[in-house]
Length: 116
Image (cartoon, rainbow, N blue to C red; front, side, top):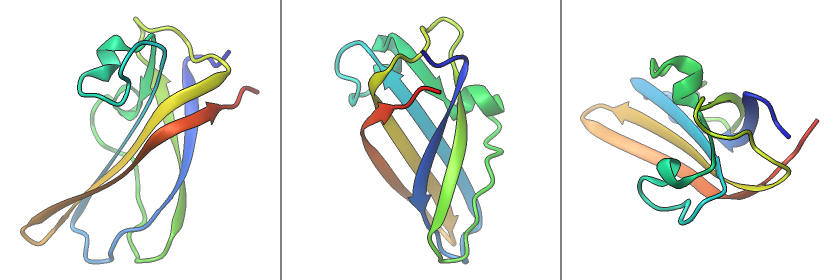
């Protein structure tokens, strides 16, 4: 069993021309249709970066055009259960503003929950 926080590691990159960056990571387990809209409400376990940062989007991201390994802490929503050993649906989403353009990139899928 995982406690009130967990860590997600992913590989990402963004352009040095990036003006603003927001990284959002979510981990969900249990419940139906976890890859659909509003799935956090259906999940029995839900952790994300909004709990960790209080929604302030303070997760630093290095934008220099090179690939970076980014480890992000996510925290459990108090009304949800702790993650269990098995698989969980992970969303790793990077949003940027380049000039007048709002861009996003994400990697979403089922990943193993490692305990310990």
